[in-house]
Amino acid sequence: MLTKMQTGGKLLSIVIPVYNEEPTVGDVIRRLKAALEPTGLEYEIIIVDDVSQDRSVEAAKRQHVSVYSLKRHMGKGYALRAGFAKAKGNIVATIDSDGSHRPEELPFLLNPLLRGEADLVIGSRFSDGKPVHTKRLNAIGNRLFNTLVEALTGNSISDSQSGYRVMTAEVLRSMNLKSGEYEIESEMLVKTVQKGFRIKEVPISFEQRTYGTSHVDPVKDGFKILVSIVSAYVRG
Image (cartoon, rainbow, N blue to C red; front, top):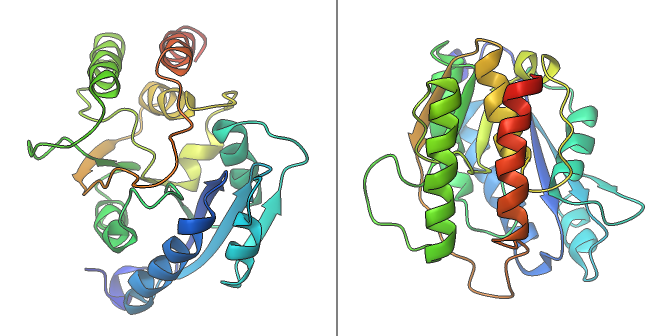
């Protein structure tokens, strides 16, 4: 775990995109606060609501964090980019709001970055070889995207689509992100490699959502991710 001596006076910005996650977003925020309190790391939590149709905004505001609402539904990538523009931290983290990521594991992602071992740390569902319960089509797509990223960049990544990440503000400032939806993770990854930054994966737990339905369309969003990987590589 982190200690106060290891944080170096840095500020952490945690950007959380939200779309119809009323049952979970409040719990995610509470658990993030509890996980970060012992570290001594100063932080801000930035919620970007992508025009939810439920009471996600109210659930988030009850936790006394910054909440920004988009004027119309734009997609996860756009919401993240809006949050990045608001972030003031030397370090920026992203985590999903549906409860699939464990906030208690954020310190493990922060450690390699604070030790100067990496510029982008990805929380990987697959790096430790343990079985992960994901939909078969999603698992196949992730392996395909990993293979394409490795072929284009030479970097072997086990979970290129993970939304649980920590990076330096310098990494974000170095790239002009354009993705509007779920392809943003791939765009960020390829551009990070191209800029010469160091990437490290850390094993994380993963809990498949137990309510509602995923907002990801495996076919439509899968195609966008493929295009994004190639486009980010070609255009830089």
